Image (cartoon, rainbow, N blue to C red; front, side, top):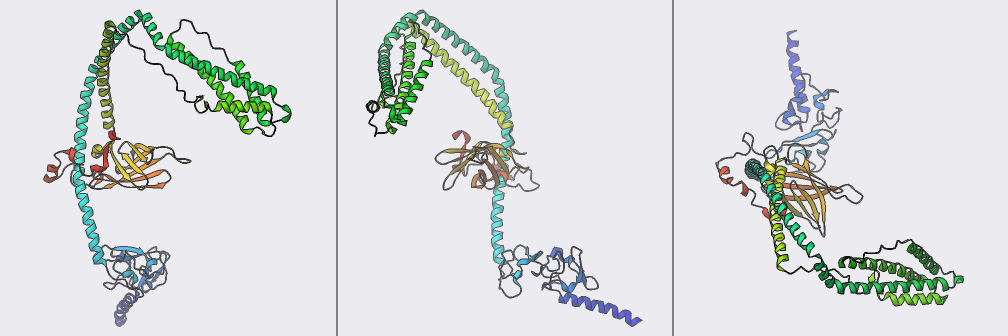
Length: 555
């Protein structure tokens, strides 16, 4: 009995040793190949040399782990072979960063970048050199570069924050000052308006008293232009009557047996024109004592009516001239064609007027030249100037209030980081277009013309690194244009790329110190002595890189 009890532990230990030996293990320990150190505790056989699949679906001999046969449903028994292909193969990558790849890529004849140590191709069929020291050195160099950018960006961001908080206080004080000026500027504007009204009323009273004198002067001034317009009306009327007579003769004398469709169409159109003329209302008789200005306007209106009639009649004749049957030799038709050809050289169809005729324009009324009239004009001019000045001051105060309230109501982040960037504009040029965005304003695309891509509509998410610009110009057969602005840490604010992942939905990528992380434990907006010295003037934080930056008002 004693000897049996001694033999059993020895046999169990031997079985466990054999299982471990047969398992495909890493060279430096008993952990199966492909298992990460954090999962090593999951790959330990029990006292009987068996092991349970990680999903609990099956118990197998530990020697079956990495035997190139898939036993477990979840593939956990083959972390170091491609038998299951669904697990993760761990690459230690000493000298660089550990990584994992799909087990389906193990011993596939390809040296995977994720396994710089070459451990994924251990079967000897493919030689993968261990380049982890070289790759790791490059990665550390890149990490140092990124860390340098983040450190400098964090310093600049602290300046942004300091500016934003100070600016918010400054704006609040400025708003209070402007609101205190409202009553004063409005009172000054009301007083200036009253003085201007009084000056105008005085001038109007004087002009009313000298009305007959001014009308006589105006009549003499306009007499030549009225005579010229009268001549134009008379000539236009004569031409219209000539074209009407031509069409009337065509209607009565053309050979109806020919059934020329072009002629019939012109005659039918002429009949419709005559009917429409009969339905027109005769113009009201003007008062014989009307002003010269009104007389000229009436002549112009009457001339315009006659010119439109000429255009209609010419279109009828021109249509027939183009399409009539030349084989019929209808004399009435030929006569109408000759009239049309003679007339066309004098007529500009696009302007509905005769060739080389410019429209007459009324000149300004000549001022009354006497000392008293000049006195009234000077008083009105001075009152108008004073009113304009008061109006400008009142408008500037109100506009200042609106602009400050707009900025105070904007969400610049919990630490006011983005206050310094509001209305700053940035451009990005590709081979075809120039893209521009004014932060918290508008985004546009320009080439030969400008297209509105959207207006700032808010932040996306809670990280204050993605802005949305919506409501842009509608795409043909598509949605309204929009922009998603994604920000990343950089030492200056600039657009680094523009793409269009979906139709009319643009992705702008912007680098800026405003999103650079500030080290944990350090109060935002506070830095060391060197940072504080460099942040004495928050206005100068963003001086570098300004060649791509414009203020919104410069657009």
